[in-house]
Length: 590
Image (cartoon, rainbow, N blue to C red; front, side, top):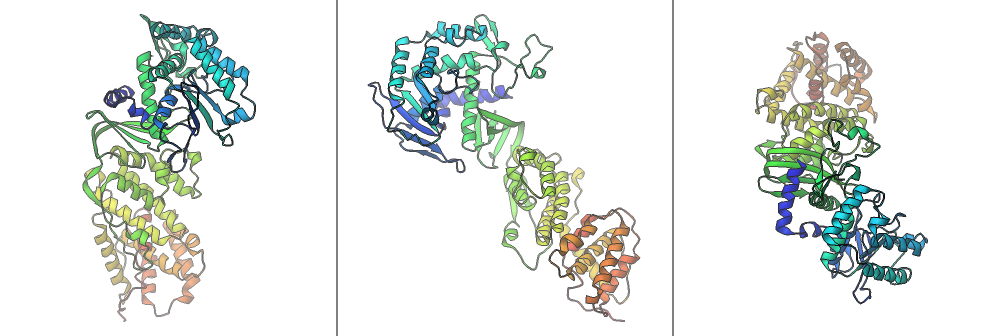
């Protein structure tokens, strides 16, 4: 997978050059100084990125592209592989000098540390790589190709730094960010000196290196954690236990690919689509996607401590952002009172998976889902435990359907979490929200029932089903004599209607959570009937003696013998629909 992704990246790199990386490169917050060839400093440039909006502030655009180029080739692979053993200086070559401002103010940066830094750069083979024969060999091969360091250049840069670093009065040292100094130079010098550092340090661990015909192959460091503390990651059955090995040219290309991904992550573009047929790469900041990818890969990335981390990857086959049929979110159960505009605007047709993903997050998960797709369970700060559990249960399936076009398991998972979350809404007294969620659940059931026999778990035309229930119940409630309930579905619908009516008679503020709970959590029909009678005895003082509707409904419930299992969905439906006891209609008197 990674190899094919890098091949597509390489084709784009050949077309666009280093601009593919540098045009989106974002240097770290700090003050940037360019020292001209005459030894004079140009105007300091302040660079900062807003952590919330990801917007870049740069005090001067005049030198920005030059700074990005210098900065890219002067960075460390990680703080575990510095040039300066004290980790005070964070740059990698003699053309640049990076230090945190507070290291200057606190006195951590000293002339001795500066001398050591430049001594290592002047003779890295002796001062840095002497203890590692693998790193030494890589560096020796590099020097054979591109030459050794110019000691006069190194000495000149060191003297300038020592003469000026503690006297840069034009630099605001109060901010806790970087001071980065670059000496003006040719681009090929920066590229060469960057490679001088990168090649011996870019591998995960040089102990896995293998040399074949003067070419060193090693294990890349990108998203790989092999080390002496993790021997279980080694492939013990192979002569070389590393999962794969790359030569210097290939590992540098892979580094650039991960640098490119890091730039995307810094901009908040975490969804990356690699189209292997068209040779294109797409990235998106929100839950969005390309119109189609016939074949390719999906990468979900994030900004790690030192590099972009790939959290999730998958193959894409015939991915289509647009649905074959529009999804219609219908107001199957109508809310006639207290209509909320937030609920109203969502009832319409949808033709994109990403739109439906946002709808699911909004209706079922109170807008929490999209921000929790890849969060650790411990990082999800939601007080409602049922909501959190359903996010963890369904997020992978929903994400795959929305962003990868994986239909398998989606309909069943939506049906399951919908019932749980509707019940949860009712327990907290959010009846209107529960109806909104019911409508979305029924809309999904109607949508998927036409997709194939294996998905026919919903009910055909729920609007007609609900209308049938209400008409039948209305006839029976208004009748002059008690008419028995015909089946379990009518029974549970009647239970929901009666529960809704009796609970409405309670005037306390917390009536919903305390009174509806036994019906939604009932493990047996005996519990349901017992609770109905308890509520009736408690509130019958508020019921007219002449109310045949209530008496008929109660008699029907008490006289029915349950045949199957408890159907909580029908109880919820009866509870959510307009209550027939309150609706208009003339009773048939004896």
